Every structure is written in structure tokens, then in C-alpha cells.
Image (cartoon, rainbow over all chains, first blue to last red; front, top):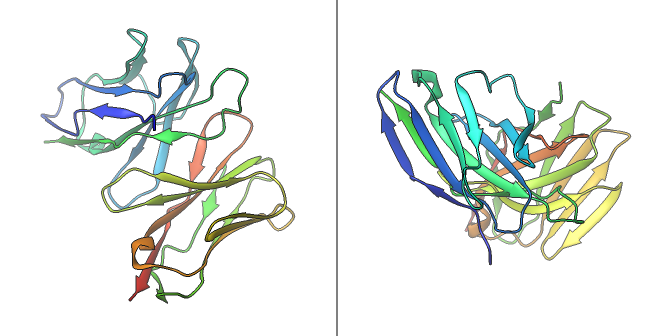
Length: 116
Length: 110
């Protein structure tokens, strides 16, 4: 069964450093997402991406964050200058094939980001 | 602001019993409703989605939606220890963003 994959599974970085989290969505999906979950808190939407542009973003997704689909398979989340409060599990998700409802979002296993 | 409210639990049920998980939401414009299961340290895994008022059954799971009362529930019949997890209620409005509740931790006691 197709699945979303994410690398790395765990990323440790120093405050102020840039990190790039990588995702490979399900191959025929058209919509891509990033969510985050701080330990013990809700899963929070960050951004959705369709047709090579951001379609929706939350107030969390400020200028420190960016997303990119650099090729036909990868989808990345970049945090330019990490803060301690960026420590969280980051989930990539994908949904929607041509002509089919985009509702059901399938989640990857997540990348645990630890900012020291 | 779409809010999804759930009792964080834990909800403890004996093995073989019915577990009832509840969720309320604030935005009447919400269109799609989801139940995800999340094991500790893992990603959300979709169990069911429901769009229309009434019940929707899938194996041991039944989702119930009442838009007038802004209420969604999930029933798990014949609960098993492997069902022990956190159950996330989620909804989508007119866009792609899915809003999650805090989740209810379910413990099935053998």
C-alpha cells in the first residue's frame, strides 16, 4: 500500500540553525501538507501546497518557514532560524488525486525535531 | 476559528466492551469529519470519515454525526487491548486545513 515517507526520523539542531525536513508524498497525490505536534498538544496545521504554490497557511507559518517541491517526488519544509519552541514532531501528509475528493489526508511517520 | 473539543481522558473500558468517544465542534460550516488513531510517538492513522448526518459503520467502528448539535462520536465495539491509543477527532471546513482536537486517550483493560 502506498505511504508517505519522511526523513530524517529525528533531527537535532542548535538554536538559530536552518533545518530542512523532507517528505515523499504518495505518488499520485496532488495536495501536500505540513502539520506539527508539540509534545502533549494538538496536531496543528502549518501549510497546504497545491500546483506548486501555497494554497493555505496558518498563523504559525511565518517568514521563518518555507516549503518547496524541488522535483517530482519530494516535498520539503525549511525552517530558517530555529527556535527552542520549534521543537516538535513534524508530520507531512498528502491527499487527492485528479477527479477524486481531496478530503482524506494520509500522514507520514513524522520527523522529531529537537532544538537545543 | 474552528475549535474541536474532546475530553482528553483517559477513558478506560474492559476488553470486549463498547468504547464511546465524543467530540463537539464550534464551526457550523464544517463539512467533513474524521477520526484518527494515534499511538504514542506515532503519526495519526485515519480510521473513518463522515460527511452526512447519521451513522456510518466500518467493521467494529461506527461514526455518528449530528450537525444540528455539532457533535461527532466514535463507537468501538468489542474493544481490544490493541485499540488502546489516543483518538483524534478532526474536521475540515471549506479549505484543505484539517483542525484536530486534543484527542481522547483510550485504555482497554484485558
